Image (cartoon, rainbow, N blue to C red; front, side):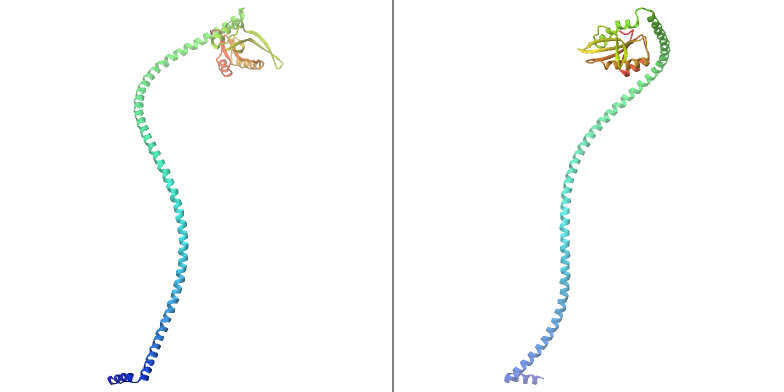
Length: 293
């Protein structure tokens, strides 16, 4: 083997054509091997290229998805920024509200302390009043007995007064100085003292209202604080509620005829029944008893 290698080396040195032939032979074989390797490498590269293409397509799709997600994220960030700004304003408002509540709480605490002190004082006062009520209750029992006795006396006195009024009524019919004359004498002074009305005299006068004649047996014209006042009155020995209503109806119609002044309605009598007082208060008619001054 060594001899063969030696001979080949010598031939390569001495024989130029042999040397070039060997070189060509060796290069062709290497080229063939290289082409074989290159073919395999190109096949692998093509496979890798195909895989890379698929990866690139997947990557492009992923990039599009990421771009869309980026847009959604940017929109969400804008919404969050707006919400954050609104939240900041709300927090500021809540802070102010908390400050106001704190001040109100402090005021309420102070008020509660004042109420507690007042409550303690009130409790003491209630205890004092309770004792006073017990005393009054005992006095009330005694007073009830006294009231019952007075009620019986008042009933007797009422009967006596009514009898006296009836006697006076009958007497006024027989005495020449009649009720109307008494009224004309008493009423002007009463009006001056109690109402500030100045009137010289009261007379009987007739008015025509809607074709009907209406009598006012106590009529006069006076002044009160410089303003004219028309006195429309009636004298009746015993005055009841129905009498007041009838007089008011007639006097109201007459008052409509009087201009430039105020109408003052009154009734004069010896006896005024409680029903007359209620009607007079409701209608604004003044009741004057003969014993009034």
